[in-house]
Length: 337
Image 1 (cartoon, one colour):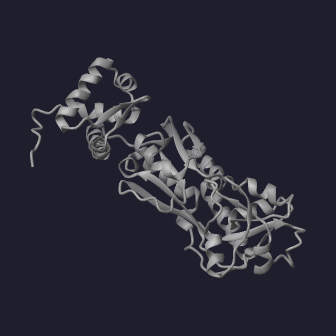
Image 2 (tube, rainbow, N blue to C red; image 1 turned 120 degrees about the vertical axis):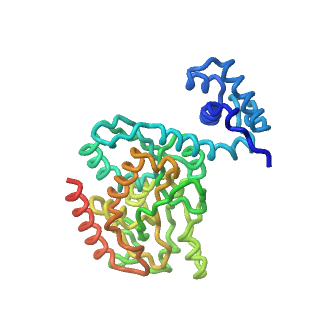
Image 3 (cartoon, one colour; image 1 turned 30 degrees about the vertical axis):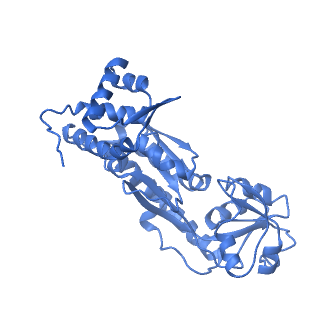
């Protein structure tokens, strides 16, 4: 295998590659690098010679990496991160002096659970830090992390795997049914399996799919429900349910919080289903940086991870879980103060 002579190679070209991959546009990359567009184009030509590949091809919006370009992106990013870390002056990280905006992708349930405790922590430890929370399809998260347009992401991310990404399980929450308090299908706060599958339902689905874990569990028992409405928002479901005869399914922690101040009833599902999980994704090399290591640790703390219980199996009463959730929240708030 032919090896490149590092003594004759210009490693600054890797910085040009990084900018081109991030911006997908020669002009914008040149501006980022404080170079002329012709100098950046010349550097791209040298990169092509160095790697014996076009690396980037033109498209109507700018440039797009070739398969070889995509293959090189992460190793080059890792190498540059290590060089920058090695050359950076060693200094103690102080969040109190940090001035930065972090961008987080998350669905509305994760944000409902996270925002209040996390903001309390940030205001106390790093008043110069701001957050930008966005909604993003799970399939787009890895590319956004790669391009640096996203710092971390919170969600289920089932079926998404990438070696360069760290994954931390933040919490697991079982599902419960939600209906208006005077729903005709409820008897003493419960609903039979027969009534459950016969009642039209609303489903939370980011992509509009109308089949999920509940449907798989029902199908395995020989049943099928009718989903008459799908919504991308967890928080929209209660407002729909409380004014109709539809029933829905929500994670228990959210259902208890919403039913406390609304004419809703959270009831045990008449069938066992797998719990909902929420994980945190971040690029492995970036996660090692002091600022990101601090943020990710504070997100874990905001979710109560150090005191999180193991995922629950089987059925337990809603009342007992509400008490546990209340005690955990009280301890977390006390610790944050």
